[in-house]
Length: 401
Image 1 (cartoon, rainbow, N blue to C red):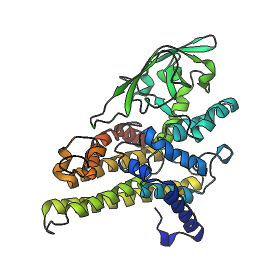
Image 2 (image 1 turned 120 degrees about the vertical axis):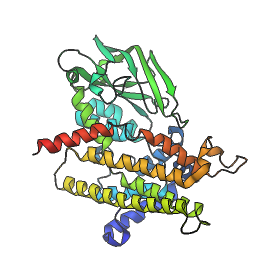
Image 3 (image 1 turned 30 degrees about the horizontal axis):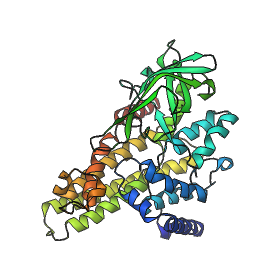
Image 4 (image 1 turned 60 degrees about the vertical axis):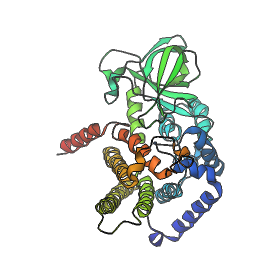
């Protein structure tokens, strides 16, 4: 995040505007929901009021084109906005609608499809989930087997999707389906967008090792989807899927990482307030925090360089992979430090909201630390495993020489 002292006058004015909005719009309940978020993003019931507040301000989809509700901000303003949201502890909104399916609708959708889906994403009345992974088809996504057969004006879908985040809240899904078995696996995939309340759709919860219900398995049994749900051309969905994954992996990691680091620094100050300076555990915690700050600084420098290149019209095809790799590994590293700082309190297993009512008066931060640690074991897996990202980076570098 650019420091206040180095911001030009217009940047400082924008930051003041954002901070004033956050001070007025973020209710205590919203801040609490943000603070208790141990997963990737806040559960929909707690996040919806915050998204509605952003929508009323006209800031719910700042990256969209202006004609569809975007803000037209400069890259510097986007950086300031993301940093201030993270620093204020705002709930983390689910990205599947605004940041994942919306860009592909804008890029590949017809005018009718844009009018049908984008306004309800912008105002928050639609909540989307992502139907990509299947049992046995995660990192090797092209091997997916969920079938869609054309039947007149409909596609009939049979199969299953797994690790479907927030499917229990979603009223719509964007889904990769196999419409042909001819040629290479990538050539027979189509991209469909449809309602979650259609007959034949069953959502079953998957509880994570942290005890959270973010994930689900979704089953499709002779689900009839209107043919108008097809985005782009039939059997050309792989191109759209790759475009979407760039948006899923892209974006800046450092605002959220800095906010988490600040929380850990506060936790450490309280946890080791009475420890001598030469205490080994104290030394390990503060040394780890200092190292993490250096790594976050380095990642921010990289993100700023990528941003500068993008402004200049230069796009790096591996930048999203590099950012995803470094950002998620740092997320995991910070959770390990959080567990170290929390100490024996992390052994308690109960919902964060019950910490104050427990007989031992457990600190919320300790329960949050273990929750984030367990949740972020998946950070190096989702959006393409980090092993796959390393292969993509290596292939690009080798092909360039």
